[in-house]
Image (cartoon, rainbow, N blue to C red; front, side, top):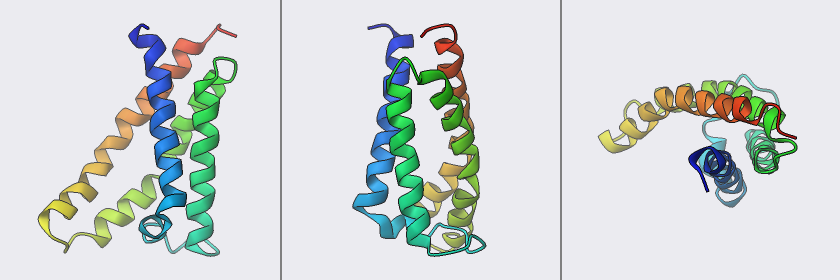
Length: 126
């Protein structure tokens, strides 16, 4: 299996793992839901987990890979405010936790670029 064939499956795996985590340990995600969003944080946690699982399935399937990868790129942009909130909320925590929260911020860009690359490589393949 070539790298270009493996990349979408790795992205799908990452999305599936993250989506599953939203249901397995929702409390850790509830705390990073921006307070400005309406409704319960748990609703947003479950909704974002469900979206990640749906995106994982879409990226895994060659037929839906391109639109799902583009949607994943948009999703990574959309969850950035939660990562900012986490970094702000964790600014007084011990150094390892603070570093993890801050480390999530620049990680979003490679995720967006990865998803866009998967979409680009899926173009014309149906």
